[in-house]
Length: 314
Image (cartoon, rainbow, N blue to C red; front, side, top):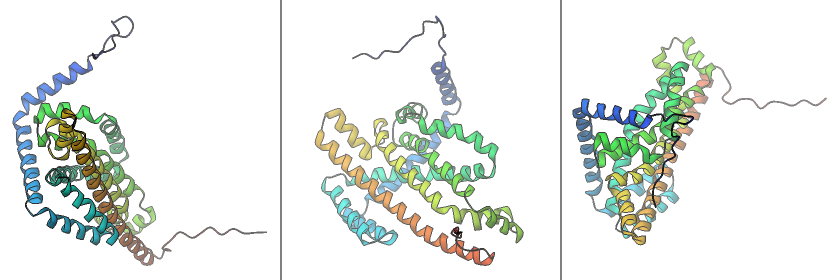
């Protein structure tokens, strides 16, 4: 099967050399900032390998027990039991080391994405012009096919874990920005005005009122960032990121159905654990935020909940 591209032959619409232009820009960036990208690659590689080694050093069953206790802490015993059974399954199919390598990649990529996304979301919530400027960039990052990001990343960071982490950050970043902005914009404006009335500075209002009340929405963004990072981490196996993505890639190249399903089911277990764990943290924060909201309402003399509209009958 051959790949073909459509041609306009310059009859009506001349060909626009977008690809050549982008390639020229990337070549210039690589030639000019090559040493910078090498330093970034070394830092990411060191952090990811260090975390992967830390996760793989204890015995797998010890780590399973620790993850189960974490599940019990953030949610309930049912989730802890499901996490224990699922993670023991990962050990049983000999994918534990790959799973911990993928978990390290996801955690590092999520950390970098949130460090960038949350401040950007806060700035976008404060400024409509900044929000309008960021939105098309987020649209581009979110709608571009995931495989496309692998090409420039490999050009700048070469094949390996560092390239996989950078591609994962690009793909997973937008939900963190969008939901942080949404959460802060949804904070009751009367509560913010009350903070101003009590003489609070903008920084105090942000830290003491807006961020705590926006946390449930921000945690939903964190959950989405983690899920997208996990999906992209598997795709990043194509550029040598290793872990479960590497096992899936190997299964495709060798037509090994068994390895493909074992690695794929391990990804599912990891996704369920991360999804439920972050959701459990978000639910816990929601309860605390509701108590905070009721406290603020008592302080400012407002009802804790919106009154139900009364219908009158004539």
